[in-house]
Length: 455
Image (cartoon, rainbow, N blue to C red; front, side):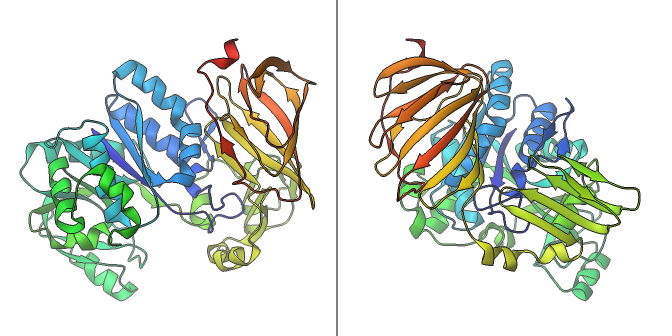
């Protein structure tokens, strides 16, 4: 299978565990096969590879999510690549947000011109963050095979609705077989209209569809004026902002839909997310026997004790603390917009950082580098840094001078000095940034020799 996963959105509705660069799909709340917690992204990729070890997966996303993707599934993709001979995972980076059709057109051009996928091959597009089980991924494989074997231009997946939702669009098929033609679309109707759609046999529009790659390249030429990857990327901010459903789906006469009756949930709010949790507490959480339907997600290094509460969600992270009735938790976004402030936690391709303290002219950060990973070689114009290694072993390079470091090592980095660090095992550093103008974009990247840390 060739699969494009759409990874979008910033994290507001699941504050404080999500923020502008950490969306819901990166929150680790599900128990994986090894007993460790995994995110929606990791869960999605693991199931795709289980159903089709040769799947070629590309994620269409914003630049702000690339580090989190590399952090969470980079090693998984490299492992899959080693066994299947494929290229692992691809990332199609959107320079800015232009809605779903430009994102899909760019990803299709990326497949053709950067990944070498033939125009005749079937491609699936699906969101990265539904809560689904293995039968969903088996249905994706069925959809991919159907696209490859038929002359239908566009094939959708429709979900058997369980209630008249006003949050989803509807696809109305012309029959009740597993595959059926499509007679109409209805975009997010009111409850009464939704029920009328269901009475006509309508399905929820899952945002999943398949096509031959050449079909999408032709649509990009027709609607955007080009299907060349570099041209699309360089002119992306000027492309027409339009959804895929409106640009393509609702206008395509050669279209059918695959009916899917398995579990499918959009975990977009705390209320729905906690329904999918395997246990009531994650992190240091303690509840007494008088609690009922309470879920705690705690990313802080302090315990949370809950007593006598019902129908509540409690979430704690360096960003803040949420204490809410589950129903009211759906309305958190406008209040989070008023909070703003410093991003306190982020995953990077090399590991993660967590802000410990914010002073007037200082920032203290706990940095964790994963084994075998390293930062970019860089310098800062407006701040100096002091690194104290607290755990693990690695190597640092400061203005070309390389030395090994371990717990207790202190590295002083004046402004303008180029530096990087490589982790031999899990390496933890307390980083103190000092200066009157500490900003995230005060970073000047430089080149460094490959495997410099072996010197």
